[in-house]
Image (cartoon, rainbow, N blue to C red; front, side, top):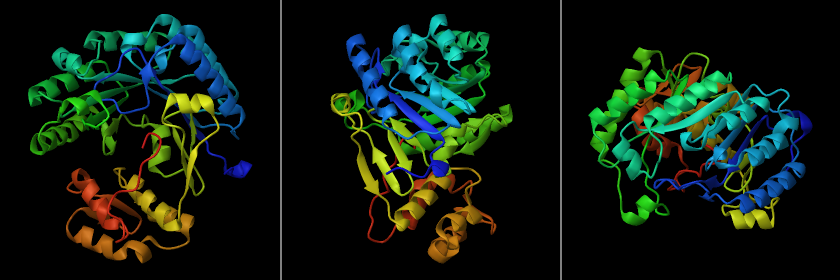
Length: 382
């Protein structure tokens, strides 16, 4: 379903399904990098881009997988495919594994207008890095950040993980300290989730117990603001003005384009998934699985995404989108959750309280229609 030109999505996510090695916790669409396969994939991406209505973009996000696993000439070709759409781009992000970054690749990123990098730090504990099948060191991340800054890409985000098997509070605290020494503009901290179709899942590896995980999360939320990083989303912290504009598109429940296998998109009342397997994408780069969303679906998904934000949901925005007051639909739930101290409602915005944030999934269940028993599926980088 294509929207009118004036309403085209202004955000695009492109998924690179290749990695030099596979992290044991990763459940995203990926396979080990092979140049011949990557060349075929680039032709499929080109075909999808040519067959998709794309206007000027405010944000572009290249994720994976490992985008920098591509050989320099293929990375150059990929970035060149996106050049026609980046004239008005304000934020252009690429995910980077420090193991695969070189000066030559950073020069290419800069040439094509990339101005933000998301580096996989994960942990400073080298024993844990080995357990994750990561092959970089904390020093490699430091050097990657310095290389990016030397080429004037100075908007840098770091990804960290907690609740890793065998991780202690001391180990987490040391990892955060080491990450802060790199002086990132943005920090994303995610607890380990073990999916069945991962190496960890097949080996029966589990995260830490819920109490320890909660203690770690509370320490993170208490500590990072003291260093100038405000929590603006349940797992994300940033210096003022350095929030991820692309991810805010998801959390504000705006439309976005998904390119390549493993990507998702949303346009109007249609949410779509590209093929999950690379072979299927290569066979037909324009094939996608579409789901028409009901108004009830979209109302819930706006709640689901918006309550991830520290400042929550604009009630005026909800009314503009759906032509009805938020309280006319969810008034009983809001009253019940505010009485329990999990939501705050000032008449202009609805947001989780400090007590409600760690219990967000339980709060969201209360907003589901009675006939539902699972949360709505997520899309893209959601």
